[in-house]
Amino acid sequence: MSGCRVISIPGLTAGDFHNSGMPMSSKVYYPVNLDLNGKKCLVVGGGKVACRKARTLMAFGARVTVVSPQIDRMLAPSVRSGRIIHIHGKYHKKQLKGCCLAIAATDDPLVNRVVFKDAAVQNILVNVVDVPELCTFIVPSVVKRGPLVLGISTGGQSPMFAQKLRQQCEQCLTLAHGEFVRMLGAVRTRIKRQYATIPQRKAIHRKLMDSKILDLVLAGKEAKAKVLLYEILHEK
Picture 1 (tube, helix red, strand yellow):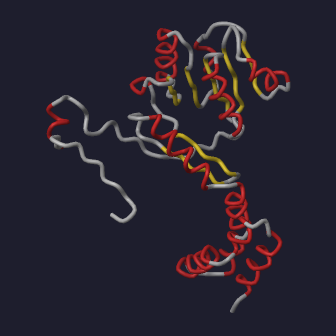
Picture 2 (cartoon, one colour):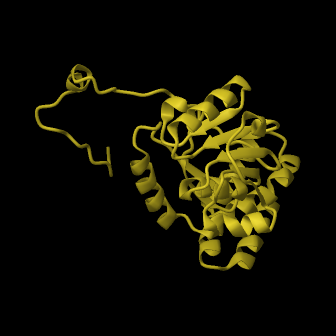
Picture 3 (cartoon, one colour):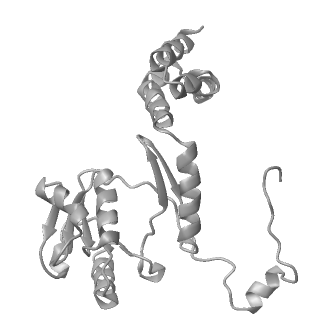
């Protein structure tokens, strides 16, 4: 495969991994984007990991409640502004009421397991950080550029490799790429009205993506990019 480097380990075959007890594959996860806008989500824990989880949920529009006797100082501004609700104290299952998602990120394995069991009984999506077997969903490593969101997952097998790939993607994807996606989204409804068939719509979208519009946006020439976009839409 062009551009790909295949790594081989002398003396090892695929069968060796089976014989050694190393899994060839893990549980298969279905990738999905959740609409958390305005939805209540619970984070149990107040350390740096819980802080990061809470802030990510908040960035995607969730109504976040954090349960912990203490919280990381990085969350304090969001609590003061009311963007995050902080319940001072220990976890109780009643705090799951009305939640669509819960994350357990404490340093107490027993508490984390209780959160998992309580959420699972109520059919609430739950993730115990770094414990895949106590998760009904796992969180990919994410690159977000406005409406453009890229999720990278290894199915829980190597989160650090997912992070490394995310860092590489962060260098390639800029806010300009997000702006380009926003521009395409702004004319999507118009394209549906203007072109009756799916092949016609695909053709015009392909033409927009293959044009110089993205290059102009990347160069900071958004006004010219919009002019070109509408010129293409008006072509006969």
